[in-house]
Image (cartoon, rainbow, N blue to C red; front, side, top):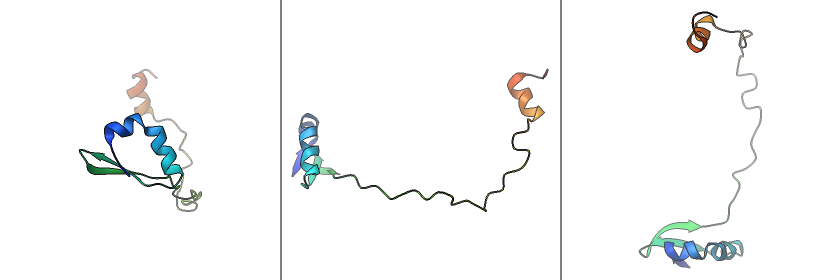
Length: 77
């Protein structure tokens, strides 16, 4: 089914219901296909811990830097 943008705007919920039930909907501008309205498919589960053992966090990561403090708070810190 090909639907122009103006019709898609007014019937979006109906079109989404059609896609939900397996129908293919193409949105067009001036009868030229622009986009397909399709069911969302998750890209997969995230993999946690990909950088484990590859990232070294310095021990002084939370220590303050006088030069940066001076930029934010002025010279009298």
